[in-house]
Length: 415
Image 1 (cartoon, helix red, strand yellow):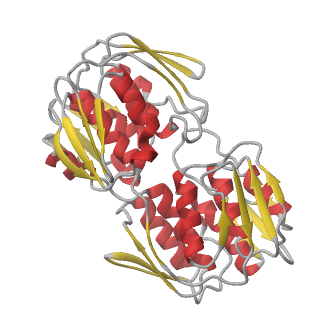
Image 2 (cartoon, rainbow, N blue to C red):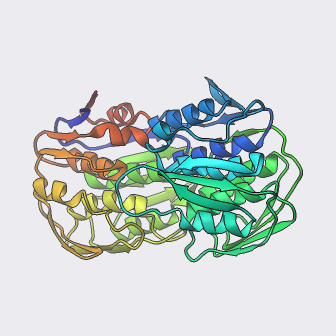
């Protein structure tokens, strides 16, 4: 069992460089299946989820290596069946379904795993594949897809699912004709995937809006691409500065991706200054209460609500979090209560009474963002905090221990 240990409270000050986005890198790695030839991906974070996706690609026949950049050559892939032992470890594994189906006219992919934060069905993915001309069955924990040809069509998503939008884009990139995805997800990670594929010769327009048009091309070619910065890592450090009363300058960020987070922090009394690819956040010590409601981009990200819950525990009044995306996203709250937080749950709402001094305790990370929230709470708590099951944190934060140490934290990660 791995542990993240925060020895005492601190004030975070200094500079930190934000790593590349996990949630952008994973679909782009899956999209490499569509590209015969050697692609080079820059700004890839060092994370366990990245390692697992690399192993999935290796198992189906791709060559994958790290030489500063991540080099993937999918020229010799012949296997259209993804390995179940790896795929069940990460949610993003299902993103290989679309490119495998497009390349081989068949695919066998296990139902995905990942953090236990709630139901994340693949029905919208399958609806898209079926509209493009594929048939499927779900059998023995696998989704088995076949088609004679993928043909462009109009697809309306009942919910702007990020994963479904990505899978449909990849399946459509080399399909015959034009595909239009309506009510598509508009997250920055969607735009980055489209940018990568367009560099490879795809014809994708509208990424970043709610309507994406893909004109199928016959083939794609290798390219070099740099993945966007991780907006959730950036937001986590911003909350760290707020919680500890510090001042941090973040390098390698896209400020437009952080608008919802920056807006709420400013509302709580933080000072935010934006530059071309940098951002500074500083605290005067005053933390006003606020409310948040998680929504698809450009709304407030569900991946940041746990970190904000820790911050709201230190605010000057009562705050409310309404979670609309994942029904089990409040599993961290009993752990914050163990640290002396005053939080009540009412369905999909958490009511947080601020002004209580957090106290160090032994707590458990139930998922990636829960782990990050508990680490942040430990940075402003009296005494030692030990976060068990800290391997979750390694799934989404590149070298978090050292980055926090560089900012003045007294922390250790123990395997």
